Image 1 (cartoon, helix red, strand yellow):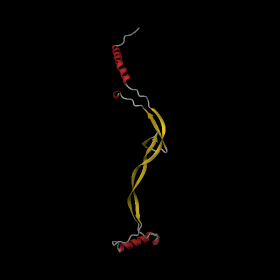
Image 2: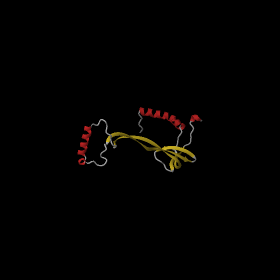
Image 3: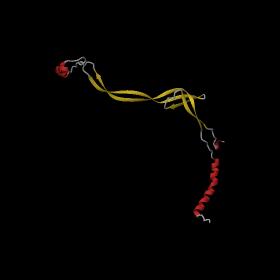
Length: 160
């Protein structure tokens, strides 16, 4: 025994059946593109040029001047005498060792250093008689593995 369909279902079915020819005509007008034809091959590397990044680092180093300090005019006899007594008391019972008679003047100095590191490689390579250039992360060596993709040019409907 068949039951009657509710009115809402009946209306929805009618709308879907009416729209079906429009959907079918749009599907016939669209162009279907297949998956790419891809293969892998090797190209001969002609030249590899590293691309460098320059980094600058600054650090503080202690710089000491070990040359003998000439007595200045501001040094008084009293200060030289106090210095001599202090040296005598602090050095091995007053005995001076070689090189200890020189005054050492030290100060903190900012030193800048530059570092160069390769961040990429510009690679020129030859494949089937044509030259190409690419920037790569690593140096490829003598030959470079490449991806070859062939896709036909399909004219658009307006270009015909």
